[in-house]
Image (cartoon, rainbow over all chains, first blue to last red; front, side, top):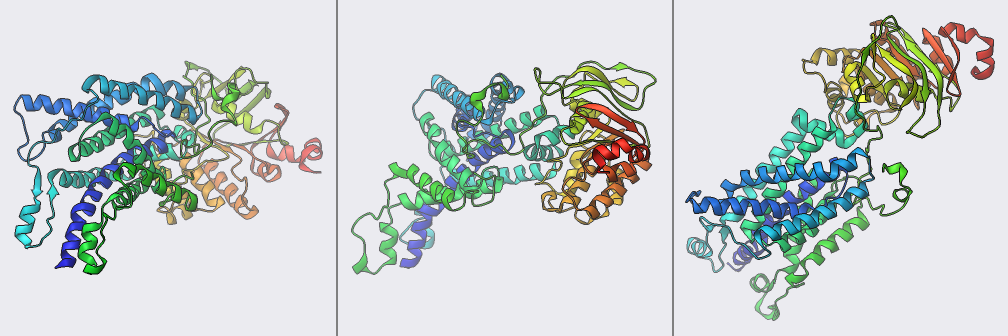
Length: 336
Length: 277
């Protein structure tokens, strides 16, 4: 019984939140890795792109709520999501038109794109705060739990409960769908293949009649969709706060690099590696250990390796280790 | 404000590849095409009196250089190192600005067109380096070659597989995993997929063994026999001139000798100056 209780406690506090957070990071890292692979720079504005996307979805959600439109047990945000993606996509295209296209025309060095993206980051950052304010917003409505801890206890008769939040379920299901769609698109469609060709060899893509501007456009639209979805899932699961989203840039980049930059499969793996490391190291293991160990060895402290305030240190620790021992990332991406 | 004009962008700053990705960056300058105009009574493809160099203010590399090819012919550009062979071909393809001269294709003056628009007009170009999509399969490489086509290209793909049977065998394999000779076959196959009106090869046998080179030349002859004009730059001058209907010996960016391949091989001056006697 104690062993089962330990497993359930572990699932409740580590595995389920880790899978949900990992899916969110993976979606974010996919966007970063696509920009890196196809537009060839690290897009520092990605966290704030997520913030803008989520903000748009929140605004639409409020509007729908005010009109009384909802999705029943599901969050209204899911209904608002397509609109958020469209607005964010248009905004990405506008940014590209105003900022990045110029640098592409003059064949600027990739580092200049990075610096430009830093500028875009600050502007989006300000835009978000200007429109929705710097405060925390909770926009999850509908049914809160698929299964609550109490129901689980009643069902199983165990001491520990396993709660499954609706947002966690939605996160995992939508992440699987999005990833499957993305891979199908990149590997099976003409446009997807042309994106891979452009990523592989710009000049040869040009000589094959692939229009670079079109590849770039499609890439921004996909990235806008990925960023909005990742942002909304994170916001539903936790909450939306512009500063938190800006900070998300760190674990997202760590995920993309750990997995192997430019490699979509790696981005997903990296997302889960980073998420689980963060949750594992910042979780207080007292409860689980209490079930597992004989009474005499029961820990008196919390057995928390790092306070959650230091969770970004974990991302960077992993990043450092991977860069030292496997510089191309877990799944071979472009050499870092 | 292009990259090369600003010295502070070169060899300085952050080289961390986790921030930027230099792989596969393009070098073909982006330019918008001008107009074409009809031109009668010239060879099928001709770069006429071409004078020019790289960039706007760069020194001239080509001086009054003329290169032409007609259907069913193989024209070969040979010459010592640094003679401007590849530059001449790039000039025909529109990768450098001509100060003087014209490029005419199939009765049309295409001097003002950008390289990508020349592809659409029917030029198939195989660069010397980076001429395949290494991360994609052989079949995907061919598909990308046919990207501008909206019709069904499966028959062209079958023709390419007939020409290069080894590619059919390896069609699901990543092109980057193939040997040097096989990669060149993928490169030529990719260019053929557009169904070009003229095929331009920049040193197709660079870095392959002599046996593979002979085989590649055989294939190129086969392609030319179908009526497709082939323009080729070659290091291996002797072998290339043997299969050439027309040869151009360039020296310092200018035409030094022109003739059929046989004539040039027999020309004592050409032999002495660079075929090694």
